[in-house]
Image (cartoon, rainbow, N blue to C red; front, side, top):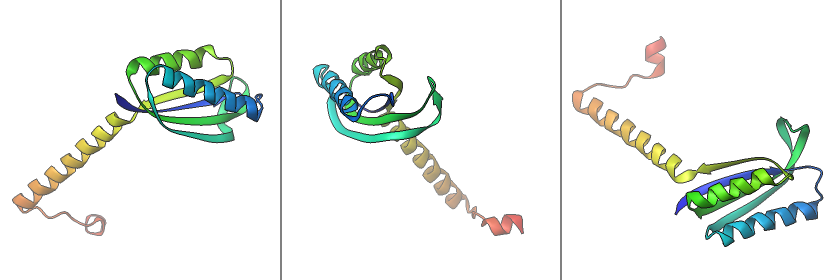
Length: 129
């Protein structure tokens, strides 16, 4: 199972009760498909950065979960088929964490190599001035 974060934006024409029901529906899909829901953040009604389907606001909800790729595909399919969902996005977090770890290791290796070669890092003031 991989670690994912999924955010979706529901239509602002929904009431608060309808928005909560929609969130419960998607939580049920995650449980039904064998995913482990770690956190649900309801951010509420917020202004969009740009218009989406002629809406300038929407109900934001964030799911953090452990799931397989099949669950994410099914969840996104259901987002596409639901008229109340105007935008969604899923991100695999363990891949981002892995990339950050590789970058950190590269920086540490470079610093160690410079230290062994006797190369001193110069301060920005020395370079400019």
